[in-house]
Length: 421
Image 1 (cartoon, one colour):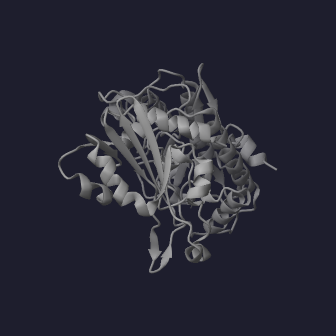
Image 2 (spheres, helix red, strand yellow; image 1 turned 90 degrees about the vertical axis):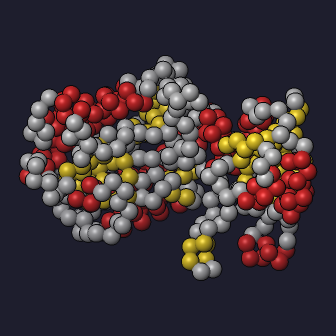
């Protein structure tokens, strides 16, 4: 778990990066309406959680910087017996003072009055431009400099601490159990939704209450819809199933894709595609180390996948010309991977302030997920490959000397998938 000292250090590091005589306002997430008077399960704003570890709504963190002096203030919801009867217990001011290593704690009801005071003594204000900040904007008008705090927090979130890595590993270990359970199942004549239920049962049974994202369980040609989440079709003997599913443990994500046969045996055509996608994935992972650029990993994955498609008669011509004309994009339309952490697509920058691509550093976590998608209606490719969609995805930690595949224990070779017990 992440200690209160680590959260405190994050707040101090963020405050140090602010301009003089400024303040930053970071708000908790709000409940979102599902329909009428029912709400989606609450999930805290990732940036707010990164700085506080606090899961309650109706909360606000304020950082004030005056020359070299820094002040941290947390606003929390009041204790209210009548309201708590319906929505659960609140920490309240008294317990919050014992738990959080901040300078001052006030009730959220006091925020409006306090923010006027803080703004009057500041020259600039930082907040998240993507959030609804009308309660802030109505006070500052045009007299202050507005700056985006989300970008600063995103830069901090790029490098994971040992505690964060431990939570990601825990999430992946639970996800491993879920994927292996489904691999072992008799899947013929089952429905995609039944497999989704098995995956998510394992998540919740292991105290991973949230899915990191909506699970994709795509049988047959459905795998060629990249974000297929309908998950309501019967599984057909002889087809493959692309399963992209990961849990979130204590707010930290996992993101794993495996492609497996419905009847536990790959056909020869399926093996042809699967083996070279796996080879590409392993080659790209082996390239990971500090100073490497993600764009170079992606370019290499394109070259390797195109080489393979030429050998299999799916594409014709020279690799460079095919890539230049983007002819491969219909089969490999997405990137090689993305940052992962508090969000499955972690809200961290890919470029620095000068617009230069950020190179890999020790402590970063990213996915690697080469894929090929061959729609059953595509008559330009050999008939035996039509309707096959394969993606293989792992979660990789960049280390001082190279990398660590955090999800290496989730089986992915044809032999291991076919023989899993």
